[in-house]
Amino acid sequence: MNSSLPDAQESRINQLENKCKTLQQTNSNLQQECKILRQTNSIILQRQLEGEAKIALLEQKLELLREASLSEYVRKAKYQEVVKKNQDYEYPVAMPSIEEIMSQGFNEQDATEIHEDIAAMVEQTKNMRSGEAMNYIDPNPIGSIYYDGYLPHYKEFVDALIEYRHTMNYRRDVRFKCSMGSMELTRDVLAILQDGFYHAHFDSMTIYSNLEVTVDRLVGYIDFIANCVAASTRLIQLDLNQIFVENTRDMDVLCEGINSNISLEHLTLDECGNEHGLSGEILSKLKSKTLKSVAICTDLSNLGPTDMSEFLSSNPSLTALDLCSNPFNRQDIVYIADALRHNTTLLNLELSWDNISNHCHLLESAIFDRASLNAAYESNHHCKIKIWGCNISSDIEKFNTYSDAIRNRNKKIYTILSTRNRNRENAAYFESDDIGIKHIPRIISLLKPLSRHNMKKRKMMSIHDDTKPLSIVYEIMRDWKMPELYNLDAMNED
Image (cartoon, rainbow, N blue to C red; front, side, top):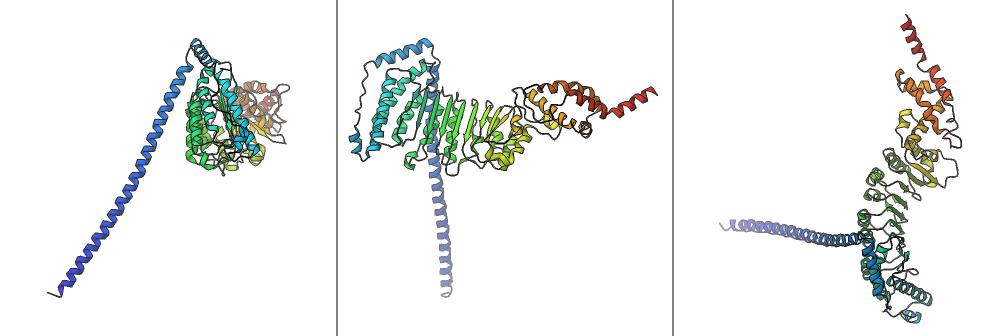
C-alpha cells in the first residue's frame, strides 16, 4: 500500500501539470483575443471618425451647393454686404521685420524670403477683404521654409478666404485659380487652410512640390488635398506636381477625393508617387463621371492586365489621356492596346516615343488591324494617338485623323483594298475570307464611298491607298467569282 503512494502522487502531479499547461494556453488565447478586440475597437473608432468627417464634408458641400444655386440678385447682395463690412478693415497682425525673423535662427536670405512671403500673404488678405476679383491666389507665393510666425497670418488669410467665397460666387465671369506648394506644413496650418479651402470656389488648383518636406510635417497632407478637392463644387482643373503618395492608403484617399468631386474635368498627375513611382493600380481606382482629360506624366509601375480597361470604362466622359514620360514595357503596351480595342470614348492618347519605340506595332494593331477586312472593321476608329519625340515617320499617327469614326473605318478598309490591288490579291483574300458571291454587288457599290477619304491634300496611310476605285472594280470583276458566274450563265442557257 505504501509502494503505491508515489505512483498516485506522480499521476496527480502530471494531472496538475497538464491543467497548468491548459490554463496557460487558455490564458494565451484570451490575451490574443483581447489584442484582436483592441485592434478591432481601434479600427471601429477610426472608421467612426472618418464617417463623421465625411458627414461634415457632405454638409459643407450641401451648403456650398445651396449658395451656388442662389439667384444673381442674392449673390450680388451678399457680395456687397461683405464689401461694406470690410470698408474700414485694417490688418490686425503685426508684420515681423527681417531682423526679428533672423533672431529665430534664420540666415538673412531665408529671413528675407519669409518676410516677403508674409508681405505677399498680407496683400492678398487685404485684397480679398476688399472684394477685389483676383484670378490668382497663392498662400505661399515665394518660400518653402516653415516659420512659427506664419500661423497668425494663415488664420487671417483663411478668414478672408472664407468671406471671399461671396466674391467668387458673385463674379462668375472670373476664373479663380489657386496655387500652393514648396511649403512645410504643420497639422495646425493644414487644419486652418483646409477650413478655408472647404468654402472657396476655385476653378483651378495647382498643388506642387511636397517631396522634400520632412516626414513629420507630411502627416495629413494627402488627406488635406483629397478633402479640399472633394469639397469643391466649382473646380474644373486640378494639377498635382511632385506630390508624395507614400502607400496604397494615400492612393485610396486621393482617388476617393477626386472621385467625389462633382465638377472636375481636367486632372494632371506629374511626377507623383514615391521612390518606386506611382502604382499602375491608381488607374483602376480613378472612377470619375466628369473627367474629360487626364495627364499622368510619372513612373507608372506594376500596370495590371485590367487597370487600363477599368480606367477607360469607369471614366465614361474621358476623351483625352496623356501618358508621356512613363517607361512602359512590352506587357504594359499589350494591356493598353487591349483596352483600346474595346473602347469608343477616348479620342486622344499621347505617348513618348522613347518609351514605346520597340512596341509601337502592338498599338497599331489595336487602331488598325490589317489581318483582314473584318479585323480592320472591328479596330478602334475613335482614338488618335500622338507620339512625342518621334524622329521618324510613324504610321500610327496617320490613323483616326477624322472626327468621324465611320470615315476613319472606311479609310482603313479602302487602304487594305488599295494595297492588295497592287498585286491583284483582293480576289484571293475574298476567297480565303469565304465571302459569298451574293456580296459582289454590295462590295462594288461601296468602293466609291470608301474612297471618299482620298481627296487632294489629305494624308495617305500608305503609298498604295491612292488607287482609283475603278482599278479595284476591274480586278474584282476579272478575278473574283467570275468563272462561277460564267458557268452559272452557261447552265441557265442550257
